[in-house]
Image (cartoon, rainbow, N blue to C red; front, side, top):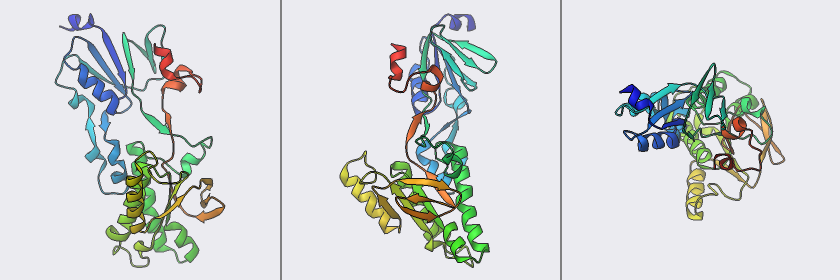
Length: 287
């Protein structure tokens, strides 16, 4: 049976996110051999990462094993590996010390954060694309309250209880609202020397409105809900000069310990691996 399967067209899917997994499911039990490659062995439900980042859910609640999802059909194979490069002419993938040939290739690796020419900001303001990101943000948020609880310096305490979210898209709006909710409700009575409900949450968006890609009525509704939760929404300004002690919002310096990046995406794999110029569409290499 394995020999018969080996003669069928080989489809390699890089990435087990929404796009890669959907492609694999469409090819399940068809007359093709499918190999799914991912750096992790689980499929991540990214829309709920903010819930993990604010301790409302555990990581296991939004991760499902890729092998279990694709286990029903014999034409499916899952490989835990990181693809380093693609040789389009030879139709081969490079993975560490090994190579894998293909007949058809689907690149569904998703995106990472774009720091607009400031990669050094990533350590200061992590984004929210992976479980590791979510766990790190959760750690920073909770430790900020713990730090504020044990210090007496009022300025340092205010900085510790100031949270700045950079980017007013869906992730930024969700994060700002969730932090406001846990500060005002979940943690409100857990501390003796601070009042978590007095935490300052600032959402920064360079566009004239939050959720700028959505209809204006939804944008206005989201803004009202954020304001009702006590979130300060700064529109039409940009965050700059990120440091350990704070950042600039427009011309104003805001002291804060926790900064979260929710602005901008970059393709995580394709352009870098294939050497595609920034002004050339990636798909042009596959026609």
